[in-house]
Image (cartoon, rainbow, N blue to C red; front, side, top):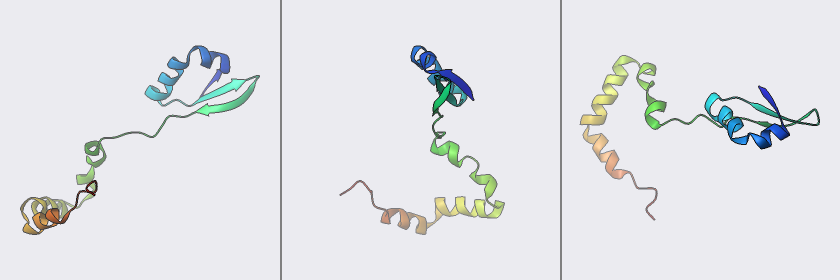
Length: 90
């Protein structure tokens, strides 16, 4: 956690925000020797591929093999896909 005066923040806003964004630092803003606010990093963003990349580690091996096989070759899977509706269609 880094403390920054309000004057320093005003003069170096871009650099302070870079610290928050790139290093995930928490910044405490100080004015008249009192802590008045904090700047916190936002939630970590991931792509769907990154979020699901470890899924295979959480499934038992047989379940994973069956899941892949069924999703690619099952007529039931194809039927279910046909039943899905586009949520943006009105």
